[in-house]
Length: 319
Image (cartoon, rainbow, N blue to C red; front, side, top):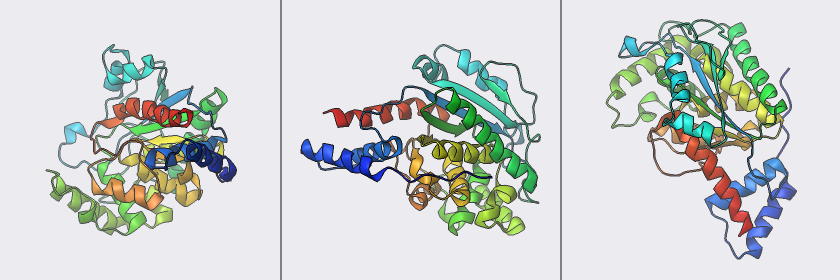
């Protein structure tokens, strides 16, 4: 049974705006984000102290251009956690707990303290030929995310950042956003993207084969990491905990979560904006603000900047 999502604390949010007024500050994007965070947490003095970054891994059956890049290597990502000059390692040194969740990669998963292996299956089906997964698998992916959120919240998490490993999820993310917005695939992809033509072809074929509706988008064209992220978002929103969305799949998952539990989007923030039009369209549809408004394409490591940016934004209430 899905949880109820509490509304934001409007009295607390108004208190934040009143604080800015006393400082003679006219609220801009940063101040609006700070007020939203106050509405989420109910505290003018809230600062994230136990941040958790969850990197969600799963393979997709649709192999687009280079099949050799299609299978995610979880071991390579985990090695970055132990490499002292990597951004993921820096995130850990900054006090962010990093968790990698394997929800359905094709390869075997190595042992590592930061890895949770809960494979629903070894990758989804090829969405250009049939549905990505069964309804039971879709439910299991969401439940997995909800369970992990519950566990991390019990250990004190007060801010979550989510991202996927990215190599094979773009077709799925675009198909979800297309299904949720009715925007054609050709309008979701950056005209400068060198892979634009095969992306459009793959997304259009997936939509034609599966005819996804908003309520069936996860099962028909999603990924196991998509359901995992959606469950994480729902679990955190139910516990009034903010969530940072990084990459293209994360806002696609937020659309799935909002379809299931309206109101979760009020607890979400994009780490930054991506050049892909699909990203902007997804954020605008959800009404989710970006912590950084510059256009970047830097992957899950951008969570390093996003957590720091959120803390800096909250400090504007101290001036």
